[in-house]
Amino acid sequence: MLALKNSVIDLHHSEKKTLVGFFSLYITLCIVILIFISFVYYKFQKDLMLSQKRIDLQNYSNEFIIELKQLHINFDKNRVYPRDTRFKTAIYDSDKQLIFSTLKSSSVQLDNIVYTSNKTIHFIKEPESYYLGARYVILEIEDNETWLDDIEQEIIIFTSIGLVIMLFIGYWLLQLFIKPMRDAMHLLDRFIKDTTHELNTPISAIVANIEMIDTSHLDDKLARKIRRIDIGAKTVSNIYQDLTYLTLNHQIMSQNENLDVGEILYQRVEYFSTLANVKHIEFKMDVQENIILLIDIKKLSKLIDNLISNAIKYNKINGTIDIILKDKHLSIFDSGKGIKKEQLALLYDRYSRFDKTVGGFGIGLNIVSMICKEYYLEIDISSEVNIGTKVDVKWK
Image (cartoon, rainbow, N blue to C red; front, top):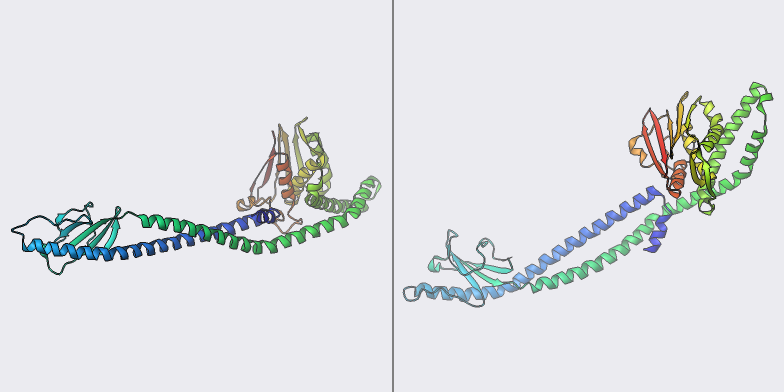
């Protein structure tokens, strides 16, 4: 099972959910099958036991009917009801009314031939002649239930062995089920690693050179071209940083320090201002000073970048982004498209995308979730379609 755990751990939430559902259904079906087989086996063994007891009870009933006949013939001389230490008896008339009984049980099932009840076995016999008016003769013997103990042990052993075998079969099936998904995930991760490696040098060069250009001395036409290049470069740079974080996260050592969250917010808003201006989006800042958080600066920047990037990406033209920072609480609200309620639970899944009209890999919020978990930050996303989305990040 350790190998199964190692296989599953590499898969993100949606794949894990699918596998858990498959394995749960498989285990449930196995248990149902084993219970059904056990029940059938129990019924078979019980019927077999009753068949064996029926032979003895048939002989007992014949003996009792002979004694009942003798009592019927000599009723004037001897009125003592026949008794036997091996069994107890009762007789009923044709209207199913009790004539006489030595049974422990007060109720009998005259429509059955042989059955068990309250640790006793009852056998019903209809004599050829109604001696003493008896149409039904009932015999009762003790059921010590030793056969039941044996069956319980056999069922426990059988179900245990069967369950172990089925678990091994389920493990094998699950391995086959996991393999294509795991291969696809590894192929995608390898592609991302190769892509980020190739993008590193050109992106760094483009961003560095654009930042060195002083657009104040350029004519408007050329300045607009430079801004478009700046927008494209920053978009690609943000995607590159996301992919790098995703593929190298476990290899990056965190260098935590006390950071002024408000200061970082203003820096990242300034960084994304060019992208926001394209859609005429207005930032509304309500930032309290001296809000300190112990965190790695790159990871805090990456968390804020992805939240602001999404707020711009899914916003409307002439929209707004409200950024509120108060005591250990960061809130970012956009006036964008919003998200359906049934999609909110899947927002943090890697590669999840619900709006194909905008670009991206669907990894931004997955990275945000990873950073929040690392630093024990509470994140909550609420949204209404055509009204907007609000992200709250809290810490202690």
